[in-house]
Image (cartoon, rainbow, N blue to C red; front, side, top):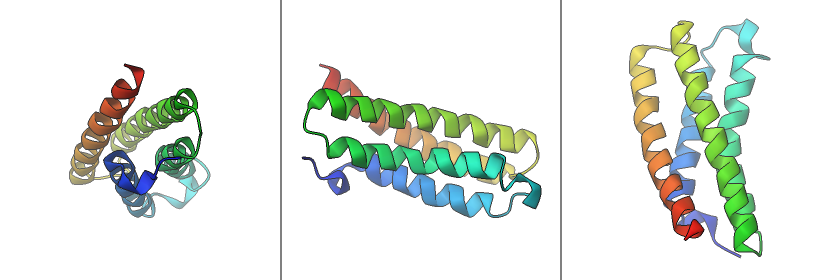
Length: 117
């Protein structure tokens, strides 16, 4: 088993999840079961799948969970973009998310590529 707390990808994903919760608490109340819920679910899915993958015995399974985490990360990126288009978040929040997203994507992507070799 692997220690997820030692992975930079986990730390970045965890920060992104916390940031997502902070931003979405200001979304319109009618979005609580819509976009707010979807974004929070996707945001929590990224670090959660990293953690679950770390607990798997085989590298194949580990990689599969990291790929699921990466998919959730891409989903969250779209949802932030949509939120900006709908006027739910400010440009500054979108820019901060973009920076966090890019950092997380680079590190998680590099981890996945290293395991595929």
